[in-house]
Amino acid sequence: MTHNQSCAGEEDSAVGVLRIRAMNPEDIDQVVGLHLDCFEGHLLVSLGARLLRLYYQAMLAEPATVALVSEDKQGRIIGFAAGTLAIGVLYSRLLTHDFPAILLATTPTLVRHPLLCRRVLRALVLRLVNPRVKGAATLSSFAVEPRARGVGAGTNLFRAFVAEVRTRGGVLLVWGAKATDDSARPFYARMARITGAISSRIAGEHVTYRMAVRDFPPDL
Ligand SMILES: CC(C)(COP(=O)(O)OP(=O)(O)OC[C@H]1O[C@@H](n2cnc3c(N)ncnc32)[C@H](O)[C@@H]1OP(=O)(O)O)[C@@H](O)C(=O)NCCC(=O)NCCS
Figure (cartoon, rainbow, N blue to C red):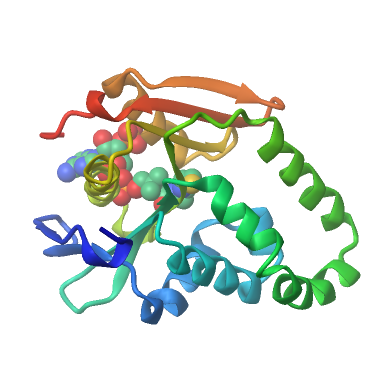
């Protein structure tokens, strides 16, 4: 099953009836807009919308991708969860096939802000030192628009993401956040408490969680 064949569902919530469905290429502009709003100061955002567009295009081109969006009654995307069952394949693609386009998209920003080069290198090193677990799925980006938060949309998306990973044979889910991310930290701490996910701090500033997919309560 590919990412665009799966996982649809409706959830009642305080922001109206939300539909969770697979992310499509037509969703990329909305998802990029939401990503820019939700991850201010993060490296990918600093590198600009063109890079983010390439990133999500690459994700949707890979069969191992799991990418879901949550939309409100009007069909507007209010949240997304995107990751992969093969993170190595995604990064290989970004660093080979997509590299010329990425270079073109990011060079003007890197020339204007050369200090970002250090952050790019650091992020790549972090990816390398973060041990890859065989068979692990990765949740790489996950957000709900600020005004729709705190009423369960994130939990519903997370649950749908885990269910999809499970359906596609993933046994372990890895995700992470900056230790300073105030909105994600309590959410992830709760998920870790509920599921027994193990957290570890990487390079002092990044927290990574590892959860056995079977430990996620389906009725959460
Ligand atoms: C992390 C994030 C996706 C959570 O989304 P959300 O929609 O607010 O998530 P929920 O509403 O399910 O849960 C948020 C809180 O509301 C509470 N909540 C959920 N449903 C509720 C309800 N019906 N009534 C009251 N509170 C509720 C939850 O218990 C949770 O509390 P906790 O954070 O202390 O654990 C969101 O904060 C976000 O987009 N953050 C910015 C992006 C980010 O940092 N992403 C993660 C790094 S990749």
